[in-house]
Image 1 (cartoon, helix red, strand yellow):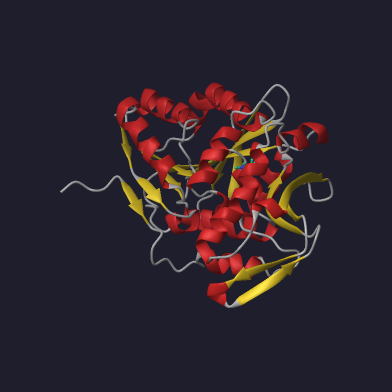
Image 2 (tube, protein in one colour):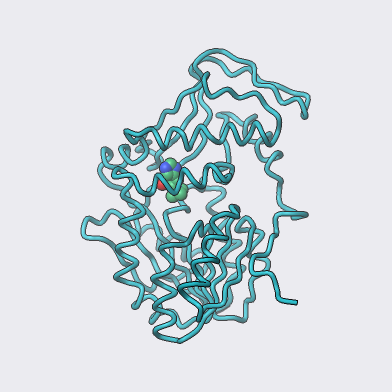
Length: 324
Ligand code: AVJ
């Protein structure tokens, strides 16, 4: 019997389950949500549409850098396997896989994602366009996926799209500790990060004229209702975002239009969501690449190369894991 090409690790894992995460962070002060809840099927679809928006420069800027740098990156990282974290439909990674085939004939591609439709698209794309690459999808959260990675296989970990910007300082540290532990000596990490820049450019990217970003952010409450049976009502809330210069991050909120009772029947509890009170649904941190390179030394990740675009808006950073 053939092995499945997409493995699911979402059942029976020791990590906190989504409902518990929601019930924990909504009772925190200020109320907030972990970003992965945004990526249900609808959310993932909306995010793919956001990537096409004229205001949302991140995706196309990163892809242009990657297109140009893929050959250099693969040459600098002699690996057999490419693990992509939060891959989505993994369109951008095609540049790396193509360079891998050109330079080494074969390879393994192991995308990890919490959303299944993207993995399925990516598998189809692989089957038709990159038959020299063995596909091994993992339907899981990153931390769960790490456990099943073979440390003896020379691997390039790829974390693109400035997804790292979703992590607050505590999750940032946890993420890089776990990632660094999962990496074998001499493995590589390619990290795509959005850079600190003019506030107007930043704010426009998260307040598009079509209202897609608002729809994406508020959709998380539809998803939460279906997960925990709560009564969030999209007609009684609005989207608000701004760039917090002190924390160097875009903050994306749902704001209550009127005092309302939010009930969680299966947990036998509720809270009063006062008019104009906010729930922080997502943060998107912006980075200084040199400073980030310094910070990641703490996790035994050493800078190898830095690629950017003509505007210095986005950076692709290549790191090498130090041998223990
Ligand atoms: C997927 C986390 C990189 O922060 O720019 C886009 C998510 N949210 N528009 C970002 C997002 C609203 C995106 N990341």
